[in-house]
Image (cartoon, rainbow, N blue to C red; front, side, top):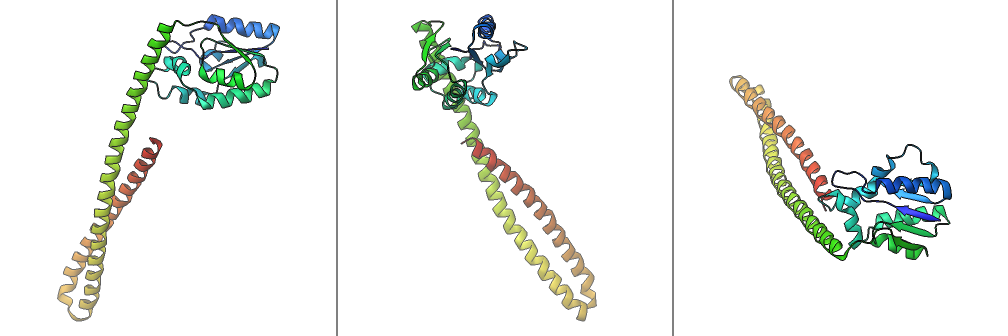
Amino acid sequence: MLVSFFIEIDADGNPRYKDEFIKDIERSKKNGGWVVAPKEYSVLVEEAGKVLYEIPEDVVERLSKPLEHKCDRDILLLIQRNHELEDWLENLLNELGNAEVMKAYGEYVSLIKVANQKNIEMYCEVAKKDGDIETGMQKVIASTQHQIQVYEEENKSLKENVHGLKEYIASTEKYVKELQIHATNLDNELKYYKSCDKDNVELLRKERDRYYKLYKENLEKLNETETAYLELKEKQNKHR
């Protein structure tokens, strides 16, 4: 049986092969077979039964992640494998069991790879001109390089912020520790003067309270900074 594959969208995010998709849905309902497509296509039909299998959104999102424009994802598939798509498609074909032919609108590397592994015939409905492919490749490469540059700049900024917070935390920890020691010393002096020098007691109590207040304020700031530091570290790890 035939498996029809759709992934193509235009610059506005609309299905590029809307009519062909709907025809393939109807043909599959009538004659057997299946249609594989992302959400942009699946929303076109209210009831497709078991002939339509939607490509998971997370797979499509990760496929589009390196691109400045999501509409170039089919061009990217012409020049680069996507292992997540391959794994999902291979599992689907195992589930379907009797797929014999796979049809797509481009010679997508991952589809060809899976088709070869499953001994399924693969063909393209639309033959793209070499010039169109070359132009598309150059466009995708430029887009990918731009995205890499953006990620590198964001990562550099995150590293600088993390380093700055780390230094601030170390400095504040030292200051808080000194405040704590001084406040403790004043507390000990206060206990001593309570027993032998009544005149200095009130002065020492005020000084001690001032240092304890400073200690608490800086400790709260330190806790807030450490929280911000951990959040930045987590964000930085996601950029790797």
